[in-house]
Length: 285
Image (tube, rainbow, N blue to C red; front, side):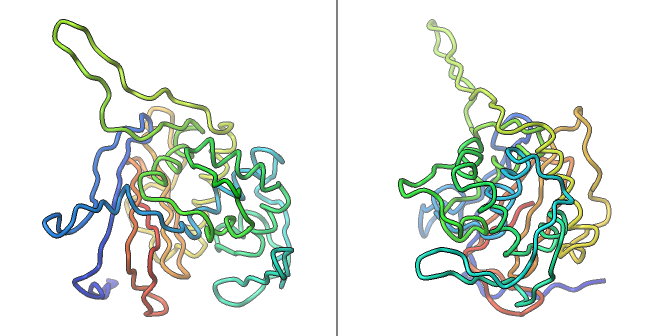
């Protein structure tokens, strides 16, 4: 039995949003640990870099949607200097390169170099278009290559939960909401439920979901492969599926589940592998 370490300290703050994957209805929000000390909602009001959770949104999703990329598409994982400012030479989490790898392998191992190359290949404009379809606002200056690995624009658990839910809903995006209608006595009913929007082709949603499942079975998420939580592709009648994508320093895990989708962010997270404290990371449930 694996024993988890205790919380780093009593000051750890977390925010969580749980949405219904099929409708976008917000089922639960946790925005702080003590509202008597402050009303700031860490589930909806923060603006944090999403890290590796952005990879399917800015790189792999657009590559499948617009370039018809297969999951076996080959990308070379190697030391690369990208044409950003005076030259940008990012690295992978373990400071190692693996040569030619498939897109499925690169995502399941959360490799940075292949991900950035994919975004560069499909085009930043396409990445922006794909992200907009999932409810994200693109800044006036646009995306940068660093957004491929979640190192640019900020977001929050509510936005991320809604975006990832589309992968489990056959590519249909639902704006997260808490009010569906208002009934005014003598004046009728005002419908407020947002209209569903097609954010991507159903095959894109399926392929991303399937690639993320590989992370749990053989990638960096095997340590978080919880028995009893489904890994199979969900059927249409069980479309309350979501994708879990957890970022714990070097640990990225994804899972398709028959439950509403949730997104958590924490101000401090203890990495189980490196025993370090990582700030402002996203975790999905």
